[in-house]
Image (cartoon, rainbow, N blue to C red; front, side, top):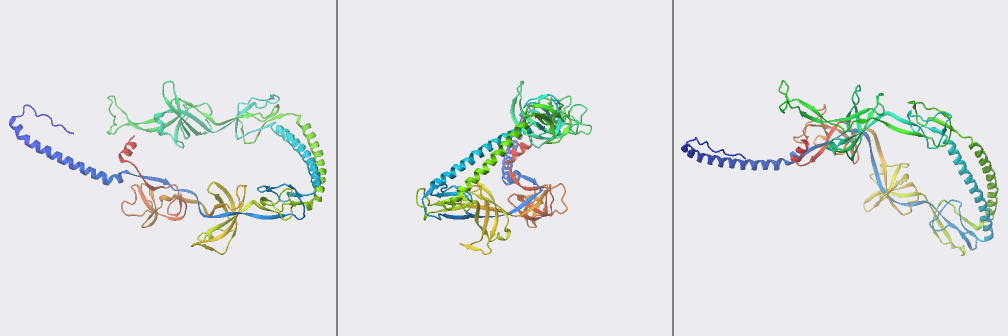
Length: 574
């Protein structure tokens, strides 16, 4: 708002009166012009707000894989079933399986008198079981001894170089003792702390400069971790942590001083009077501004793993030398303990004797079971008992038991008429139960005759599913099959494909028009972009195959990000 300065006292009174009316008229005109300008500015903002607020968003084309899918649904059913009935009259003396139990082919489901024969069988089986338990215990002892003997050899957990060797041949070694360290120095790590005033400048994957001690050239590195810890220094600064991974050209090692340096911008250089300095041509002189860490950091090995003895013994052999490169699994140290061999021979002899006793006892069991063949009901298939009318102590005549094999389930599926040509017998599919439980299946059968249900045409199919015990007959499931897969193709984000009057196009960012660029209607292509016609292949929810017209690593327009123009400009200006 401008002010009217008082007229000088020296001005004549008459001139002052003549000008008074003129001034009033000028003020009125200025006010009217200001009002008109405000209205015009408001209208401009209203009609240009959308254009000012539009910020182009971009992504890049890339090389990848795309697939098209076929989906459908169906209901599960058991792959096999069998009904078991008694072949002789008599009372059910033992019912070994109930509804819900899982049985194997050959399992005894129930027995029919005589009871004393069953008792003899049980007694014979207990003998076998007793011997088997002893064998299992001995095998456990043998496993422990072999594991302990295997631990006498210390091998490298990964490739690297040996440092800080702490054992020599002939020395005693205790379990858990650190024998050396295995380091990976192909890359080095540098962790430093920066003030929170730089918090918005750092991000994982960012390329930064690493300054090394005098005599070393600066190197570039990638930030592999940015953690917003709150480290408070003694002088009151709050710091966050930044870690860079540095490729080692061969002259870097642990403990060397280094600093992460990130250029944040430029600022004018001031002269002695505090004014912006200029060069001879009158151009402003500027200097780079950097984000610097709170204190100097030290390089560390990319990985440093202790070589630990897993058993006690005497070091009989050592293949370790300081800074010797070794590969993963290489033998580093061999310890010696002679007490294991005698124990292993003794245990193996006892196992052999017990196995012979088990074989004889099992023959006795088999002979007794053979006598009861007609008084036993045997499971003819693997499966689960879903119904049974047998009752212990009741007459077996007329009773039955239904077994279904649910190890392998069949999904009675429906394939849409539009998709039936895309699938085939033997194709792998993914089965989903309410998008919570997933299984893999194989199409085993597709009907050649379609069916119609209320205007929906589909083809029945069967899908074999390996059941993990959670599927039961009658469950509703959906399936997904990959109908086609294209690898190593150029892919653009699906929202980047723009369908224009000239067909599908990508709007490519470039300083100069590409060779195949075309002209579209005014205001269709954002500033700084060029319309490039492309041929599109298959698509999914995220990407579209580009058959021709564009290559990988092109920056393409996807849409506008709308935000308040003033706020956006303020943010851009810092």
